[in-house]
Image (cartoon, rainbow, N blue to C red):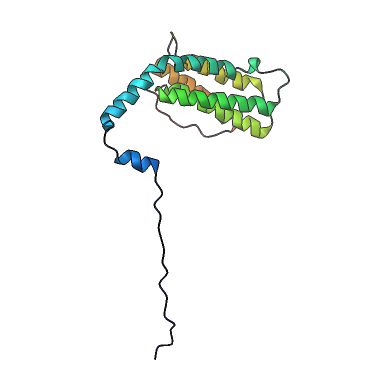
Length: 171
């Protein structure tokens, strides 16, 4: 004799919802991967000039003397971080490693100053000056000079106790 009750099979209905991506993938046509990558590289190169001009405008936003008078310290530093992050995105997109690294260090400094509640303007001004030196323009620093600028910014970070100095390759 079996004491276990018999299990009734549950009927489950599955409804497949149309998915736009799956539909597009199943359709014939489109580009091969290599063609799509080449087209994307051409599109990116077409945006280079306007993007590099935008970097100059973003650097102007970083400059502490151009900050709004009476702006709160945290607002000013948040604006520096925002503009710095935008420069980092553009610089890394177009292979400007030294500029991206200098902006990362500026963002680290701005974050540390915001956390401490102190906002001395000189360290920010030094970082912005370094960023101006590393920005694309008629006078580009060579790799050795760019490395020297980044090393000096690293010393400032050590002074403020932000982070340990690390070696980052520069193209």
